[in-house]
Amino acid sequence: MQLSAGAPHPLGATWDGRGTNFALFSANAERVELCLFDGHGRREIERIVLPERTEDVWHGCLNDVAPGQLYGYRVHGPYHPERGLRFNSHKLLVDPYAKQLAGRLVWSDAHFGYRAGSARADLSFDRRDNARGMPKSVVVDEAFTWGKERRP
Image (cartoon, helix red, strand yellow):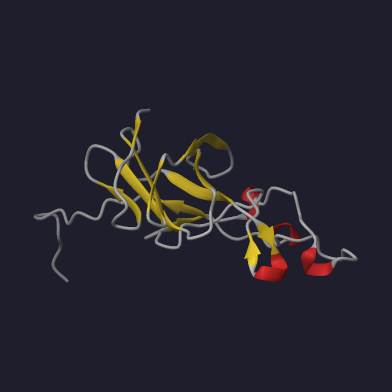
């Protein structure tokens, strides 16, 4: 799999027939990791640091990623809840620009960035990985395939 700089726009995952460009906005992130999952979304098969930041958009392009690929993000940055910054790379994030999701949310308090029940309440930090219970974003082919439409 070959990684290149890609482009900051459009946001989300964009397949162009040769590869997929990933672009995610985050003004305060220090690093963004793209997590690729197997076809069932149960196992993370690769974690790739997005190599470029243009203004506040993190981006990279992977030549071998095609429609159907399941993915999510882990975003690194400061954890200062009292200032509204709650980065927690132990938590898998859904792409806010995803055009499709796979799987379902299996609710647990592992989805919180803080330790539920801690004496420090929401100022605490939770290190549990929540990926098993998170839906995954899906790379899609947005091209309309002319000639395959059916009459209503």
